[in-house]
Image 1 (cartoon, rainbow, N blue to C red):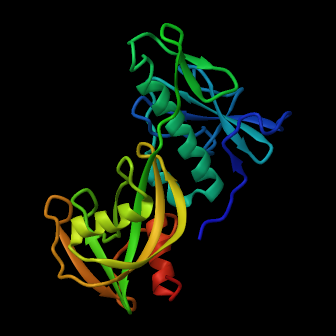
Image 2: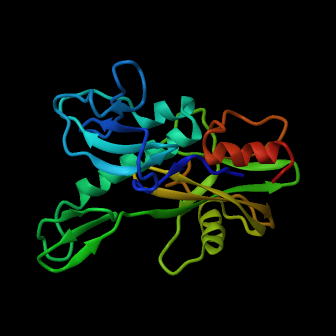
Length: 263
């Protein structure tokens, strides 16, 4: 489903970069675009209030960094993503997650001592207790449940009232992704599944999810909506789908695959 982009989450993948560019975020972790409208700033034209530059990765032959700037107003990544390329989305998502990680782990969770950046490794190190903190990634599953020409969609209270999407949830410790698919769907909808199939993945930096996309065939059971998770739950025919997420999201691509008979 997903294709590789020219973003690599290794700042040293290119020994001699053509350019060095910076994704600048506000205190609220919204993106602050460059003055000329680009998503990234040149290292020679940064806001006066910008803080430390943290390495993120390489996009093509450019090395990318991320920094926070105080007192600026930015745009949420959710509003930027629809018009960004897959490589730009990957780079910006990685940048935001790096910044969130450094913010959340300024102090060691084991002993409370201050952490420091480990050069050439994505690690925050506590010299007091010799503990290393690696970036947090939270694996999730999202699944297109289908029954012939019908697709099961739900509405979340966190989404716009006319937006329908797929069932999703976090993988619990000790649980396989496929087991999480079956559990989450049963918890939120009451139905049983068969033919659980993996389709692809997507990094979702709100704040640090890794979405694993699946399709599954309905195998029985009456609909039983989890009222604390969903405000609505319905089956829709592939020819009359409601408003759903765009194809720049893994949810949108899974729904598109179903509507085109590929799920």
